[in-house]
Length: 302
Image 1 (cartoon, rainbow, N blue to C red):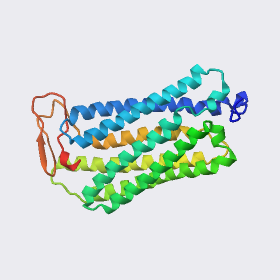
Image 2 (image 1 turned 90 degrees about the horizontal axis):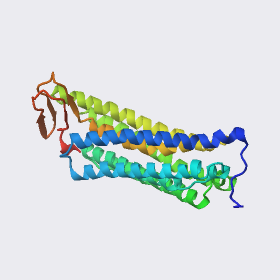
Image 3 (image 1 turned 180 degrees about the vertical axis):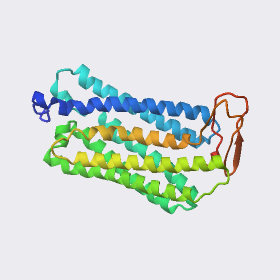
Image 4 (image 1 turned 90 degrees about the vertical axis):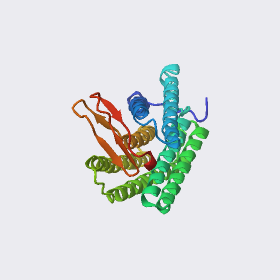
């Protein structure tokens, strides 16, 4: 028997070990569905966006799709291929790649997008530089978690006294660094966006919506990161942290798409014309009485 084999789990404790992976599959797949809808709306509404933004959006979707496939594959092996094998519940499988590694890479790109936006709004690269540094730190922490999980192969080994301290430090660098980055992003985006006072009513409405979404999504991702770290360091239930850790990447991706798609305006048949404006570009929706999706808000600002 493998010296790192999973210790026997009494029947009443099986749910503690098997419950979190099941939630991971359900939440990860559900959030991918939400992200797919947002990607489709983006494809319809903003065909003229800059190429770098299109590459970012579709690249993040590709990473999240690959992550979900890897998660489903790993847990299919756990619950189906190795059905009845209690030790299989403790194997990391390919989750070392799909959860910490792909999640932190995805987070880095999303936070880099926000850093770019802040550098344009603030006309300064100082705050953006701080955000990128913190994002690189969380990336390093996530990669360290992935390396440890790949080397040790069992969750019980990762929770052993010899390794748990270093593992918790790595998780802390990942999650706390990411949370600090999110807080800075939310504060800076809110501050700089609130300084604009557009004269067109529709633009003011969209701007207020963007500010609200920035605060809400930044708070959500920061809270998930802190919760993930808090659960990870709890001694009595070392498996529950897998749930927030596995879905936070999807939350980041959906948050970014919500913000990007907030430029979108839905027009009904009762609205014959609507002007949507931000600096540098104007757009007027066609008055044909059809339901349309309009995404004509300054690509230069993105």
